[in-house]
Image 1 (cartoon, one colour):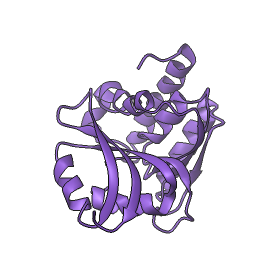
Image 2 (cartoon, rainbow, N blue to C red):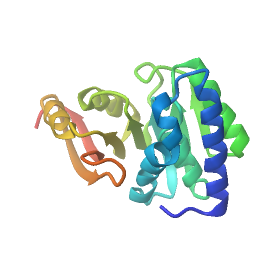
Image 3 (cartoon, rainbow, N blue to C red):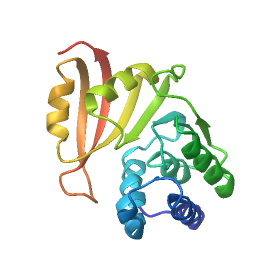
Length: 198
């Protein structure tokens, strides 16, 4: 994704803060810090490319180090989208709020609660990366995704097995978008979530 100078500057501020904080709290695997942009930031920007949305409420579940939620909020800062980053770890929540302040983002806020116990967000869009097996994520979508909403879930090579397992309990439509940064990985674009197997 080609980004504006302002977006690029904000992403650099985010990257610098992530490297600084990562020595104190585990935001990303230490071995991936040297390749932070390609391994993490560019990876998450794929969702910004896939989603053409320009307004509405977006919930990022289990935001951790801000992947993909903060990256998306930065990439979509010039739209009317508002982002809620849900993260139960207080230290990681503090990091997310620090980045929001440092980058001057006005479209993002942090909810420091567990995903399964925070009030339903009724979001138009939901994202998650490296959070949980798809079957578990479906329960989170059922709670926080609006009835006509779309989810963007980043999954590794075992995504087909996860879809098969999730379909035993959930009904949903999906499109698998191949990853440009990790061979075999995909972003699952999911809609029409309802409890009960098809």
